[in-house]
Image (cartoon, rainbow, N blue to C red; front, side, top):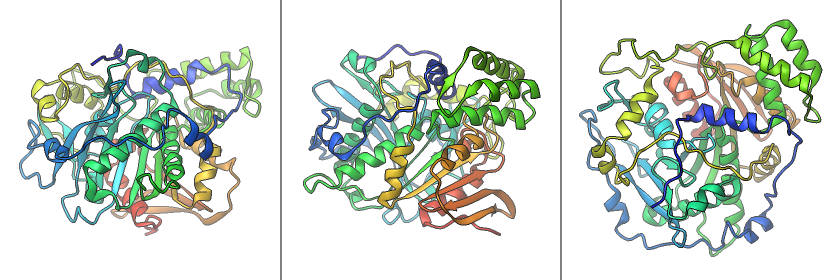
Length: 471
């Protein structure tokens, strides 16, 4: 197998790199995402090839993860699904069933963003998965607010080159983009459902965060389009939920700097300069605009822009073992890196023995500046759509999400109100016609990392098809 050059980037760095790479070209455009184009695009190769899957589910079952706590009461699986046998392109997954009534609960797919970052390293090991990694980098502790309490959760490392996923064709890493990622993810799902046929008719949800604001809607629209072909596997898509989601460049950039100013991280003068010289309507950003934007970043100082109130990771800070899911540890990414690079862990996961990294340095080819037209199509399809936001994130802040959604001009069905969990305000929610916007109080960019209990309340409500509790 061939792996891309791995850099030291993380999910946050990757999104920042994308933003900066096109800061001088924010002219709004939409790549073609019509049903006819999907079915005729060679990257979507209809009908999707299904490889032999007999016996693969049993072979993928994890007997035990190294260092896992006692009393694990659910099934775990991990392995590879080939999406292009000619190119030797194969995607890695980690799947955890629910401890209670797994045969009745829905199937939920989680995708991390980047672009090019690991859903195993972030989603499973730092956010919503059943375990977190202790500071020794060798043992695990239980996440009592894991989302597999309410669903059977599938984590996919996509595109190829991310995490344990790989391709035998080096050029695949130079030709990665939104469409190829959607096509491979869809092909993965069709084959995975053959491997796990008991989930074929299960209610299905796609969730994710950050640049998955692209991945999730694009995959959902691909599923809806493909479902209209009777000789293709029909996937019972019920809804999508995207957190701190990058969905529209112009409104998202405006939202970042308004957030910095309203949270006392930028001066009045800098904010005035940004608003004067940055034209978010046309996407015409002058040299003076870039000057004030750079100044805005400098004024914010050395803090974690993905949670402006969170501590930074200092290796000298003493850590407790076992860890606590209720206490955010800013060094948790280091522990995950150590754990997933242990040979015995990779063996238990049925992964290729390699140097695992949280993100890969892909050459990203296609990335539309706005996903709003696809979201309009998803609204028209009738599936449930939630956009949620940790309100302490400065990279894709709640202001960005509000500006993006406001451009859709959707009528309000349920007015803004505080929602509760454990007798405290968990956040705020407003329901529009066809879309729900929700905040999670006290959370940063990776919502379940900072507020796991509130995140579980939120996703439980989403899966039940009702708004979170108002008291």
